[in-house]
Length: 378
Image (cartoon, rainbow, N blue to C red; front, side, top):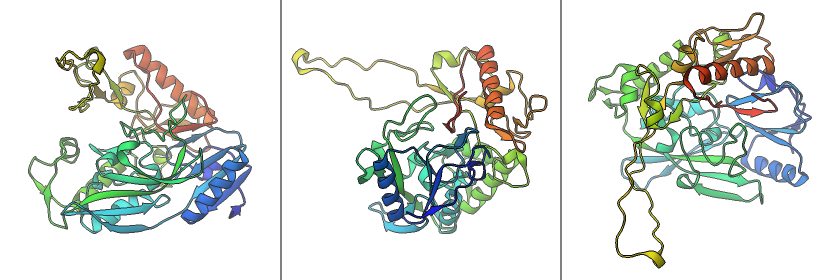
C-alpha cells in the first residue's frame, strides 16, 4: 500500500479542522484503492476515505485510524443507447468542477448549473449534489463501488442508490450510519450532446437565478460563467485568499417539510414544491382482494424551504460570530459556516448549535447539517 507521512486533516478539508491521523495512504489508481480498502477492512481498523474534503467536518482530536485519500483521475467516453446523448465514466477522485468544465467545453449538457461545487466526482452521488434545480440524480446512470461488507466490486444502477434530496443510501447522516457501507470507485453520467449553440434553459429555478427569460437561448459556456460568478458573489467558490470560502459550502440543508407545516411559516419564506411520486406502488394482498382497487390517497407534495432565510430571520445575520471566536457565518451567505482562520472544530460546532437553537425557537424546525461529521458533535 502507498503509505505516506500523515498530514493534519485541517489541510485536507475546506473547513480546515482536524488533526493528523495515525496512518495515511494515497490511492493513485482504482486498483490501489480497491486493494487498500480490502486490506484495511480485513484488519478492522477505523478508516476515513477522503476525496476533496469539502463535505467533511472533522473534530479537533487526531483521527485514530487510517485516512485513505482518493487521488484517482480520468474521464472515459462511452456510447449511449439514446440518440443525442453521450456517457462519461469518471474516476472517483477526479475534481468535480474539472468534469463540469470538460462537459461544457465538449457541449455536453446536464451539469453546467453545478459549476463551482467543490469536491470530487465520487462524492457527488453520496449526497446527490445539486444547485439551481440541477441534481446529479438527473444524469447519473450507475456507479462502480466496493462494498465494505464483503470487499466485492459491483456496478450499481442509480435507481438502487436511494437518491433523494442531498442524500443516498451511501451517506452517513448526522446521528446515523449509511444504509450501504461502500466506497464509490467511478461514476457514469449520461449527458445531452447539444454542442456550442444556445438552447433554452428548462429549469425555472436556474432561469430565475441567472435572470434568463423562458425560451431564451443561452450557451453552456454562458451558463457556467454566470453560475461561477453567482457562486463567487456568495463566497461559494473556493479561494485561499477569502475566508468567506473556508467552509463546507451550505452547512445546513434546506429543509423539506410537509405542506401543512410550510403553511405555519411566514408567507415570505422562500419555498419550492418537491415533486410528488406520480406512480406510487400499491400492494393489495391477494387473500383479501375483492376486485376493487382503492383510489390513491390524496396528499399534498412536500415543500422545500430556505434554510438561509430561516437563519437570517431568526436574528442571525451574515457575518455573525461570537466575541473572540474564530468561527463565523460568511459575510456573503447565511448558510455557510466559515473558519475565519485557525478556528477549532468546537468553535464551529458551538456556532452551529446556536443557529439550530435559534431557528427551532423561532420557527419550530431543527435544521440538519449537510456535511458528514467525524468525531464532532452538535
